[in-house]
Length: 148
Image (spheres, rainbow, N blue to C red):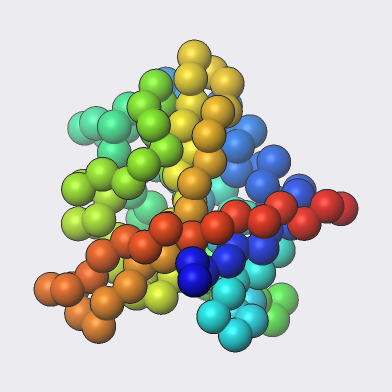
């Protein structure tokens, strides 16, 4: 059974709008929520600055200091970083080899939204599984949007 990602409608809309706003570059940000059994509940998203100046249309990177700031903010609200999101401008919402190589938060969710000509299209979620960097992989996760 696939991991379920229950995401509040406001958070789902926010990450998709962020992708549209940053087009033609990749957007990025953090997913804040709580682990319920084996499923994640995402309550909020935090936009981050894509610091990849060399290839922002096809890559993203969040500065470590920004991740620390987001993590502190999440803890103060009783939440955790549940994972990260980014966009794929004019490409499918499927993970790439680069996405896998640059994902390091085992047990966390990675959400990707395809942005086609400035409009958010498909959004998919993946759980990063494995016990180490050497055997990590993405597993499909099901998204359930929770109405406001």
